[in-house]
Amino acid sequence: MAQKSSWNSLFCCFTPQDTSPRTAGSSPSCKSFSSINSMELLSPEDLSLTLAGSNLYVFTMSELKNATRNFSNSNFIGSGGFGPVYKGFIDEKLRPGLKPQQIAVKYLDTDGTQGHREWLAEVFFLGQLRNPNLVKLIGYCYEDEHRMVVYEYMDKGSLENHLFKSGAFATLPWMTRMKIAVGAAKGLAFLHEAEKPVIYRDFKASNILLDPDYSAKLSDFGLAKDGPQGDETHVTTRVMGTHGYAAPEYIMTGHLTTKSDVYSFGVVLLELLTGRRCVDKKRKPREQNLVEWARPYLKKADKLYRIMDPSLESQYSTKGAEIAAQVAYRCLSENPKSRPHMQEVVKALEPVLELKDVPIGTFVFTLIVEDDKGEDGEEKVRVEAKRRDDEKPRSHHDRHKQKYPNSAIHADDVFQWNGSYARSLRACRRSLSNNRERGA
Image (cartoon, rainbow, N blue to C red; front, side):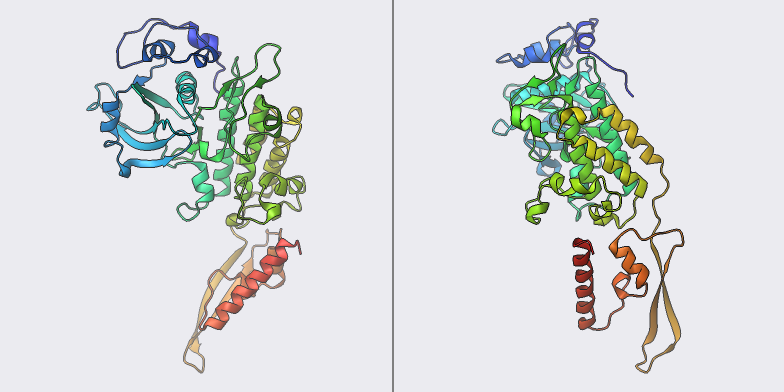
């Protein structure tokens, strides 16, 4: 766990450094983010002084144009409430002393849902915070009307893309999902445990970025807030965030605490378990709100399989899923005081990464081509299915496999010679799926 840090120590104890127009200034400033945020306009010089000692690069518009090929469409990565994001590359050719690396440049859209203050929060928080589970801010651009932030480039993109864009990405394996959950939990715990806590306020799948090893890093701090101080129990603020992830008490009252982030983490953990979006209007009415639909199953180990992501194909740790479900259940408590602290969440989930009970596969299919041929001259083909002795059926689908092991419904490779057989097989699959939905 990274060492705790306080805003006082971050902003009031910097020693003078070499002054340069292309790096954050050197004179220390003891302004808090709330005082900076209240200013009508913070000049580039004032911001540079405030971020003294942060080692951030202050890029020019011209430099970032060169780095992104003039913000070309071929370098476009995506967009959000902040604005478009472009991939780029920096090295010593752009500026002496720059480490060669790929970057991501977020360009503030002044007509978007976020503005100068959100951009300022992004630069302010990530300019001072350093942790393996927070995306690294390399620098920023504050020139005329242009506002940009420059991050390290995250090769694997966002968790949202991997979970919900199945056509473009392979299914995330169980252990990778749990690794992401633990990493994201550590990122939140780091924020919450600072001497002056930081409330993230916008924890969601699209803000969790993944590096080449699928380590999770939190990004997009535009909505982050300083936590309550002294005897304060909460921060009262305008309700912002993303529908489906925000804690119910925050939506109702505008009261924001670290436990609001804990609720949002529970929603994302539920998305990792189920492979479903927190809100999905394309589903049946009773299944459109993920939390309401899944919550009753989280404390019932014998029912948990009903909400697990079908794309995992039962290749997950039963014990690990039960632990993760229990953690999600606590995080999603309607009473904020009943929710765990994020450090408790980390301690509960880390042991899941050590469990070795993820099944290799329920069935081993053997294709046997017999030497003799039938009357029609075709080679005889049969598929043999064998269950591993140490596997126990955990769902209706598995129980059906055990009772009818030779059923073509369960074959991975189906050999068919006419269209009617294919239609019949699909009908059987639909029937079995419907029975499972009813809990048969």
